[in-house]
Image 1 (tube, one colour):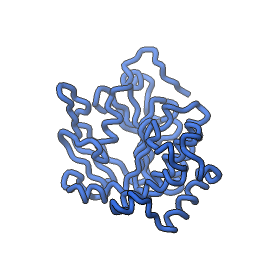
Image 2 (cartoon, rainbow, N blue to C red):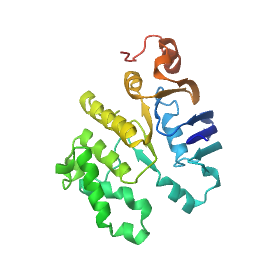
Image 3 (cartoon, rainbow, N blue to C red):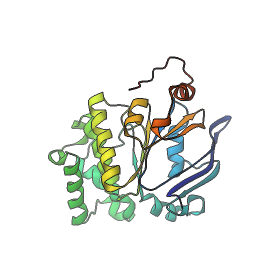
Image 4 (cartoon, rainbow, N blue to C red):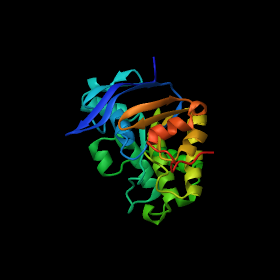
Length: 253
């Protein structure tokens, strides 16, 4: 059985079809890059996988569970297994780095524990271990609004990791970063995927980055899959088809 299976995922907004019967399956431990132009449906697809957005039609089966069959409590439990990393970080800027990381444990907390920040000593120790792994141990008590963009994104990764996820959904994690910071983030995601074995889905604009880091690339255009396969088989003609471009603002190694 596939670790993640999307079957005919369709999402409609009023008169707009964002996704058109998208189907694919993913094995555990894969690093998958989703490429395509702005508005292609990449972010919508990621949010349909963890049901931050409810698909108009289709099924998402993750780790043997069909998300369409879940009530709200069951969905909350399943989401513990799925970490989410955002383009604009989604951190609480007035809080410290370690406090933001610990927010990744809120899915395991009661409402009371979440409101009053009741975290076990073991959870705090794990937060510091993860920060050390990501080179942020010395920043643990700094407010997040004092950090650079690359540091903020590493905090976002740490927050996702402390959930102990089986799947990481990364929505344009390097789009707001300079090339040097982007490389650092992609190196960390690659290391997490390969050394820990967490399956990663990464939305990217940069084709060259997808070619370098991904085990598999899914190319989407206007809500439809144009390409699904290994980086080595992705031809320039297909890239131009995905981006509907003759010249391309596409970077190719």
